[in-house]
Length: 338
Picture 1: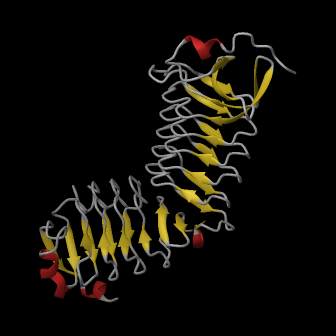
Picture 2: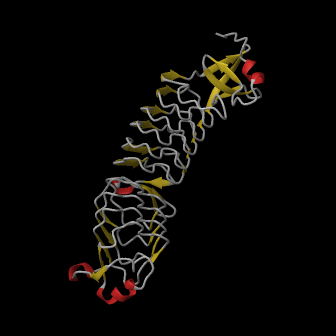
Picture 3: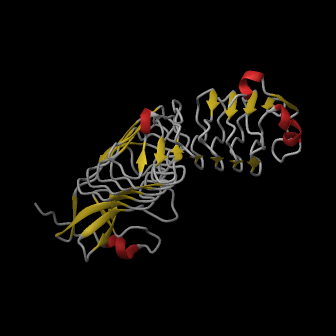
């Protein structure tokens, strides 16, 4: 049934600073007349909207303006940014995208079910949604943007559907993930051997880790920020298959107490272990000290014991990144075996 909304164009001409075209039933929209579609929009480009929406709300499948129906296909950029009192949003069937920063800093948003039509979640779309405990990603989703769900501290489980072909940098950084799975038919990513991690098939790069991750033997690279701010495990073992640890891979892992690096490791990226302040012991079996990027061990306790092959002690004492440690000693005999 159509609804006549005679005032829906008032906002379009009344204030040049407004970020939306129309206001219908207290929800702001941008209209795309050529396709008869609409996206939810922020009220203003320059005004705070912390208390604009509260509690629970429903975005309709179709909105009407001047007797014309528009399908709601997107939640636009920054549409609900900083709405601290928003608890739940029921998204419309037929929604195709959640744009950049759409729900950023909605710190009380508790759960989110994306309809079976969404194909893209933009950068920082749910960044810092601190109370988000449940997330359901639809089979239709293809792309998850950079930091899309970063700092969702209460998000503990994640299931990646089979059609996802792009996961951005730090998409799930600083969550509290303990269960991670990838649909077995996904051609780009996998979570082989129930490792509780996301691995990029083509490059064998582990891009998202968790508290319970067990790094499979086939992984060649620990990706950028893969374990950043992870609250576990306490004892991290990097297997022989890994030759490269990228920038920020374990940044801020304050719960890590010991670190074991294999004999095949060749490089450690910038700030890879920065701010891992609880580390008390590191062992590295590589005879040639792995090349360290800038501040690879920034704020790591330099009094921590560093165990290396006995024949390589002097090399480590002279190598960038490694020479900072005060106690560089020989690996125990058993540990030197490859």
